[in-house]
Each structure stands twice: as C-alpha cells, then as structure tokens.
Length: 469
Image 1 (cartoon, helix red, strand yellow):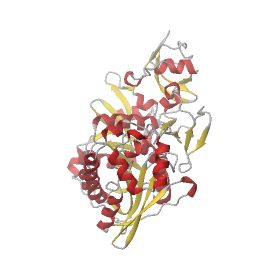
Image 2 (cartoon, one colour; image 1 turned 180 degrees about the vertical axis):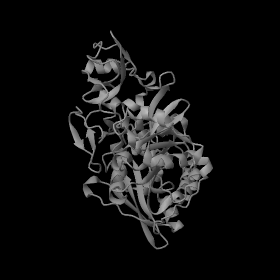
Image 3 (cartoon, helix red, strand yellow; image 1 turned 30 degrees about the vertical axis):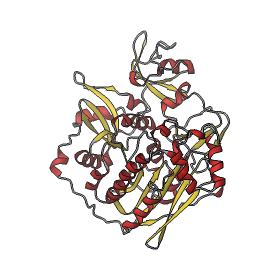
Image 4 (tube, one colour; image 1 turned 90 degrees about the vertical axis):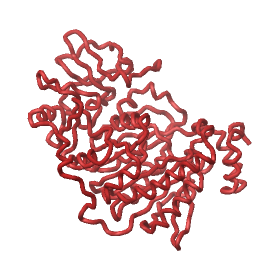
C-alpha cells in the first residue's frame, strides 16, 4: 500500500473491497499515490491565446485540456478575464450528457441545483443558447460568492443565481427543461485531490448526505417538464449515494433511463441497477481507470409529453411589484451595451442590472417565488445628479458591453499591476477622457478612469491579486 493510501479510512477501504476486485483495489491504491491531474475548460465567448505547454485534450469535453504540470494560475491575467475555468476533468462528463440528450438547439430553461463554485454552471452556459435561461442555485452563503464571481467572469447575462432548498422549486411545476443535481455527497472521489475530505469522512456523513439526496430526487423532478432531462451526479463511490438513488428514481416510475455513449478508451465504468424490470445505468469515474477524480453520473428522461400550458401560477399583483427602470434612465443604460434594445433594467439598492428582455418575466417570477442572489449583468450605479452611469466591474467583463467604449491593450507587467490595484506604467490613454477599459490579449480586465495626468485604477479591491507575481 502507498504512503498516501495508508491514510484512507479503514471502513472506506473495507467497503470498497466489496465493490471492486482484488486487482482493482491494488490499482486504486497505486493510483491514489499519484498527483491529481490538472485540467481547464476554455470560454467559447472569450477566445484567447492561452499559453500552457504540454497540453492534451480531455476526451469527453470539446473545450477542455489537461496540463502536464500545474502552473501558477495567479500569474495569468487571462483567468481573471474569464478566458478559461480550472475544472476537474471527470466533472466535465456533464458535457456528454447534455450534448447527447438536451435540446441544446432550442431556447431552454436549465436549473443547476447545487451550483457552487461554478464549474458545471459555466459549462452549461457554454452549451445553451443566448436566449436560454440558467438558474444557478446555491443555498450556502460562503459558497455563493465564488459561484457569482465565476459566472460574472464567464460574461453572459442569461443567468439568475438563487438560494433555495430543493422543496422550494416545487412551486415551479414543469418549468425547467433540464435539471442538473450535482448533489452534496461524502466526497470520496475527492480524497486524492483534497486530503481534508478524508478527515471529514465518516459513515454518518454518508447517511446524512443520502438523506439530502433522497429529498432532492423526491422534490426537484416536480419542476421538470414532461420530456425533460434530469441529470444526477456525485463525487463519491458510495452505493448509498449512487446505486440507491438509481433505485429511488426507478421506483418513482416517472422516468425513463438514458444511455450515454462512451468511447472505451475513456475508462469509464458502467454501473447497472435493475428495479421493477427496468435497468438504469450510472457512469463511474475511478482514479486507476480514468484520468480524473471520482465521479458518478446518471441521466433520465421524464415520461410524458410536454404541456403547452405551464402548470405553475404566480400572482400578477406580485409580479408587478418587481419594478423595472424607467424609460429615460433605461436609455442611458442602453448606450453602454452592444445591443442595448435587447435589454430591460432592474434596480435594487441603487444597483442597476441588465436583464435580457426575453427573460424579464422569468426573472420576475423567480424573484417573487425564490430567494434571488444575483440577476443578469450588474451595470453599476446611476449618478442622480447628472443621470450618468458609474459602471460596475461586471459590466466591464461581460459579453454584452458596447464595442465602442474606449480601451487599451496592455503588456503583461501592466496587467499584473492593474490586477494588484497598483499604478501602471501607462499614465494616460491618448484621446480618451473618462471611463475606459484595460485589456490583456484582447480580453477586458476592468475599468480605469482617465484623468488629465493619470489613470485611476477601478479594479475591485475584493478581487485584487494579492500573491507576489
């Protein structure tokens, strides 16, 4: 047994020996002593020249690569611009489930139920149409902050971040076309990558997670349309959290199991469960067979034909209580956007948000039925004295900002100084006065304000680079 594998809980190993062959157990322990592979997924909305050497494709995700040696991501301004997301490779198998079974050519509504820190949400956002809606849900406050930050960097306005337990979504009967539930779990698949998960593990934790997962499987499908896609996943190997959930879904008799086509070279293990004469398949990623960490994923189609009439109702009176910005102020906002007429604007505590017009009613409905943390793209604050916008960082890094806004592309050292919120070598931008964008390799990092003899750095203090680079 390897030195690292010796730290694995004895009860975990004992159970795993009942799941795997003796040969697989030996291979598992040997693989556990290796370093977890590093991988990233590029942002299709922000194409950029990413300078990582010795990369190889992640075979089940078109926009992802492995990196042979983990770089210092803090040294790369492009990650701050949202050019890519560092994501564990196995979790990107969601790409295959969606590509093979979701109606991605249509404008759809997707719920990512357990969304933090944003890997699966940004992946979903890369695949759906721009008129689709992504609801990214995270109930834990400290986990919601990185979720919002990562979606902001991805740049699309068609997202709403909520903070609700699974039973809350039952108000939205047959509302979503796709529901992704990467359920809270005992984290056994992360043992190699994050040793802290070993210390947190216990049979009691498995039982606690199982109870949460059972509720998710009971409640969430009620808000899924007939014919809709339900994807359930965990990052654990525990049968109580995986195979038992397959049985629970089959027991409901509401779903048809789906197969995901695999390439044998991927090394993914199929897990079959039979209930009531019907077989369902789960897909397991395990260290010694796949290049990635532990994952379990399964996909189902809800039975029935989609209804032409939505089965939820929200009081029109409540909907009217969600006030949008007045016409005059909205016209000022539209000047900052590339296609301003495609948006309406919502104001909350003096902050103004751009909401795609086709999603305004959905936003209002979610706002009055759920706890909403964030919506659309934050534009900034309106200066009441002159009716002009004080732009927010979110607008700067968004994919909807007007191309006519002044900008300058800086060299690497100035980009790092900007991200540290320090003075840069450039002191002004020729022919520009007022707000301008700082770019690196063509991608926006944030705002500066151009004064006669200097630039004021408006990079958000809470996001500034603190490492020595």
